[in-house]
Image 1 (tube, helix red, strand yellow):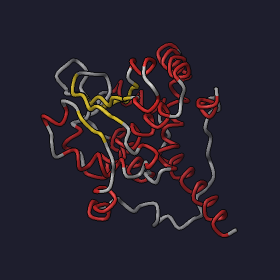
Image 2 (cartoon, helix red, strand yellow):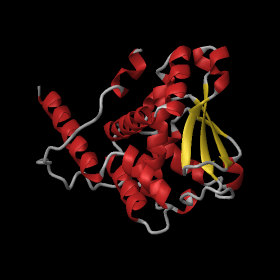
Image 3 (cartoon, one colour):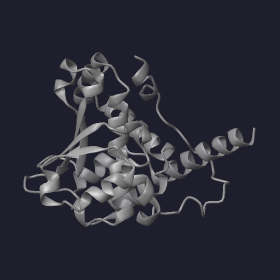
Length: 231
């Protein structure tokens, strides 16, 4: 299946970054995105905004890195899950026309047995990086056909090997959409914070790109982009 072909290969990047790494450490600045955010044709809704209405501004900044998702309908739910947040296609998409597909991003309310990061209290850049990862998932779903989404969901539930490849490829998409450093600081916090549940940290260690891999892939992507623009 074309939309899932990139997930089949394990991502490996061990090169030493020889590009000016000062560029890597640039954080997104909210004010820079005012014009872009105000022009977004986004359809964001859901119970999460009833609790944290101001968070929509941060979500719109993250969405500005994904022009492919203009006009896509995304529901933000707020309930108990195992992770801090996750992205899912609506199961009713199989009955809808592609133009009417909807997606959900669920944020953990930390009221169940699985405690995660208090997402609303995280620094701005970290929130944008986390949201960028979930929007990369949404982008993948948007590029699939109905049958591909069913196969993806089946593999994600029953294959740990597939979960690792899918999550690492989603990190790569996040990097390619300009969110390497926000992803980096979020991963660093997740791996090193003493407040994070050990099982959650272990899940991240197994299924996420490492800090060195994020830098390596950022360098590789921007070097290739620079060479392309020169030619």
